[in-house]
Length: 232
Image (cartoon, rainbow, N blue to C red; front, side, top):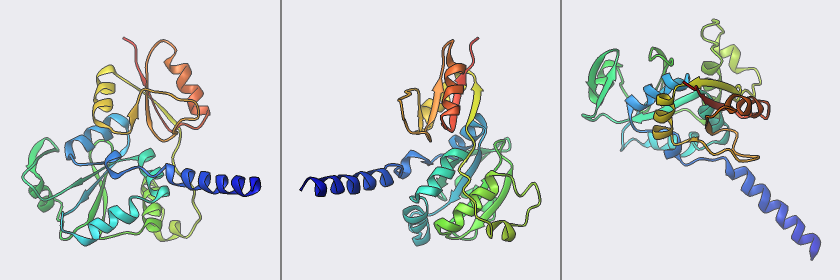
């Protein structure tokens, strides 16, 4: 009986551990174009905007199947700020002008949903992917963009043939108090609570005189997203 209990405990523990990373979509799939672009700039990450529609079958499939995949989520939260927009009259700022989301759809030539558009941290379009993409192929696309293979002129088809386990690079970024306030107010994955053996994929905001020392310790431990508030 004792042996069976131990085996059962291990099975349950394994199930909990394997599911533990799967964030609900509202933790990382934002609904504001402006917030996505601002966070991308402040956190120095590429942006992804999914042009979508509430009644779109493949948009739902993308969210239900691809964006809930563990590996996809790990790559996304370490390297990108992600948002989804519908063709509404909500306003967005882009390249110094104000547009409705409907106008963004037209301006980017969106002919079907979902269409996934990638941007640099300063808001310059990189490329787009039309239609539904499964988790395996999306992981490859994300890694290709995140590691800047397109700037190196690496052929995507050749890149996709190679085994790749890249999730991100542990990074310390110094930010102002104002930026820290914006991130903590608008990024659902941000936190100022540092727990031992905590979630290494959250966005940790650290401040105080020992902040940089703590950040370097976290970096060594494999925490990916560390933001140190600069003292005035």
